[in-house]
Image (cartoon, rainbow, N blue to C red; front, side, top):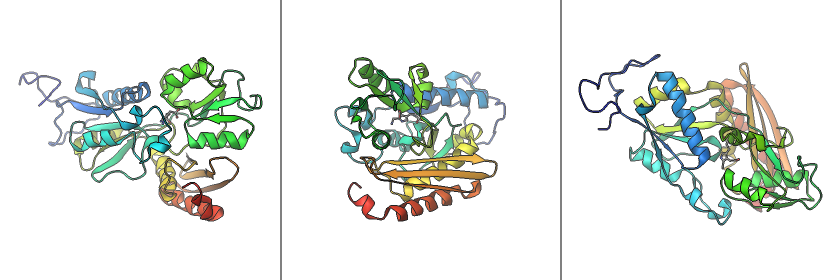
Length: 335
Ligand SMILES: NCc1[nH]cc(CCC(=O)O)c1CC(=O)O
């Protein structure tokens, strides 16, 4: 068994943790393995999670191993992911590693997580959410509204493409893939006049200075889960649950339960432009959702509030409302 204190019985003493849990099931000297994709953003998120765990449990860095796992979504670079089909392009191999016990937890962007997880796995922690807004990075104009007619904006997200077309039908929206750094390089090379990325991701990468405009939430609502890191574990793994419990952020978890219920009830796939954002105020939750056609010409919105305790039911209710407003034919053409 790998331990970070070595197998020498002298040094393999139990660790006292600050707020510790001391159940007999917990082998505190055993390495805790954190699985992640290898992109710079994924690694930044895994490091952030590790720091929080170190702080919460008074553990040194050596208590953790960060395991990089290659996923299909990162290997496909030549076509839009919506064409590659299937859900979980960023999660499948990582979830296999979890189920095979090669890792103890997996750190993800909530936005990339399918609403239904494989049996035996669960999302057991959501870290405090970063700013959920989308950011515009303009090369020839600082704002989306300031771009001249015919300017080219690159985005790989169907939601962003639809929202840009809704706001500026006169722009040329092109598919733009690659990780954050690749997209910034393509922008600098002049392939496009501007691009959109999540403020949260840019901040985590120390690239917030590249942003020329932050889009308001009402004009440019984010994807469900945007800006929130989530952690997945095997159901019933008490050691992982105890490790994650102190770093989980309750308000974020509540907001995410609502947003993911909305997405799940709409059966959101990669081909459906769906936006949804929930915020907590005291014991209340306020949700707004939007569905669009990919060309941005038609959209239906919904805004609801309720008790935070009913977050999931509120998300489902919002989905029913927006579905009824849109009519089933709205989904037919492009579902
Ligand atoms: N699909 C890629 C992805 N997944 C999560 C983020 C941003 C970080 C976040 O939303 O937490 C990004 C990049 C982007 O949209 O700019």
